[in-house]
Image (cartoon, rainbow, N blue to C red; front, side, top):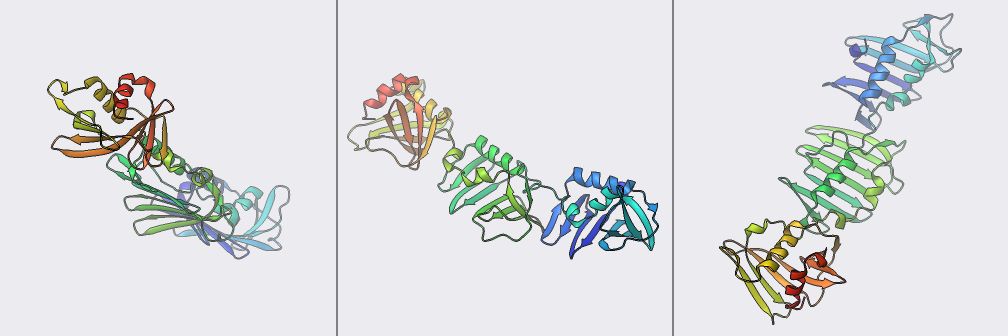
Length: 363
């Protein structure tokens, strides 16, 4: 039966590819290749080999092209295959006996065919447990790190990341598939590195989209040559701004005890304090401000500095702990909120009392 087959090996024209069964999975091994087999492809191939039936042939093959071995534990079947076929049959030699087998089996035993059993996944086994992602594309770097349940962007700037956008990126990487590259690649210009515990996935590609994928888990490292894969276009044009968190402040509104507001010049200042029944003054505008900053997703995000003439808003937590300083201004019907590196835009017409309140400080 197919389940009894523990290995398949094929050699032709100096190339050897082997299928190995170990620790519950099949591996494809060859020059520059040690990679998990695709489960469906391997299962189908093993079933065909297990069901193969040979018929006596008049003579052995004239010219041997493939040497193949099919192993089942300590037992092994060794086949020598010729090049041609006749009437859908191919002549092989098994232990000195000439047999005819279906041509499909002969094709299956080519090194190139066995190489095709390798999983097309570029990052096999990648899942939601990922803790860091680093992407280098033509000189630019985007780096993400997860702490607990929250993601943060570490490059090209340090700021909270949008978890849904990161999940989409992980999904694209987890399903990325690529074919086999026949030759070693040139110097890489695209790099992807993903980690999860003791597991690390790396992909390096040159300008032509050819390169190497490796997967390390503990002391084991898997490797295969790959060519341009399905997620590569997204990686080439990855936009760090699209990964930035859409809310300006990663903090529950109830944690804010005091808000200080000032014009950029410092000439006009005010402060509101949380009291038993709300806020010391301007309660409606303050609640609108906190609701917008902490709970509303921005309609636009840009990586840039603040505009001149902005209102400076400082949030202070209980215990007099600083919670962030923001610069706010109104431009083209949008409320712009900048944290020093990122500007988020909100539709101000939804917050009329906030617009009127900020205008008193020059925003």
